[in-house]
Length: 339
Image (cartoon, rainbow, N blue to C red; front, side):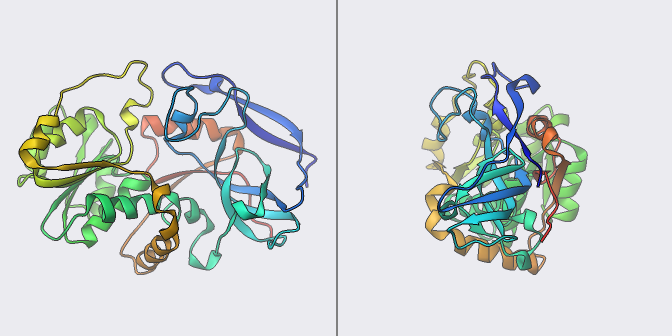
């Protein structure tokens, strides 16, 4: 085991879009686990859009990082040393750990990863937080049913791609917004979406929806916000359900734009708009993971991962989320499994 450990700190609060100067890579001694703790060697590190909010000082649904704090993320890792826990050397675990080669954690804060369910990286994607977000946001909030038209933004991402497929399993017509022709082809040809819209090549989102969703929108899963959501609101049907999962188009805004005011449409349609956090469904995580695992095993849900190699490149992987560089789940591979 190396004597030094690399980890990332929040170097400064970004003004608008973060850049490489937002991150500071430091080296220190490999930590030792205290009583009830384990030492984990990072194999895969997740980067997610919600982390942008934790870089600001203002209030958000996730507590902000302080300048100088270690950055944290979902990690899949291998237990190197256990100090009074139920884990053993070589076990594969997942938890919210530091952006680092090695990190300690309380055994109670970690969950076992079963490699028999699929590649261990899926514990950060389709069988992890993004998959569960899609599962509960679609089935419990957006609630598409047979014959509905379901629209999802960020459709080629880790959450949106799964949400659209779950809606398809419900019998809905599924329309996805994505940022390139390659991503649209992924949605239509590989995932079975009924229509994809390349928002980068579309000047009139309402006209695009008129073609892709001629009967209006019954169910909307929003990961993006902004002008696309304004357009979708104009197409909502009576009793439509809207699940607000993310607003990535606004995360780097230095001043929050007003945009068109669409709440009047909710009176006309009696639509329901609901924001949600996947953590609200924590008591049912096992249920979601089990069902997602069955769908993946039966090839009813497909997934893709974009993997960046090396901890030193984790900031680039994170920044790429805001440029639409990933298809499916964006991961950073930090190490190889040894056991």
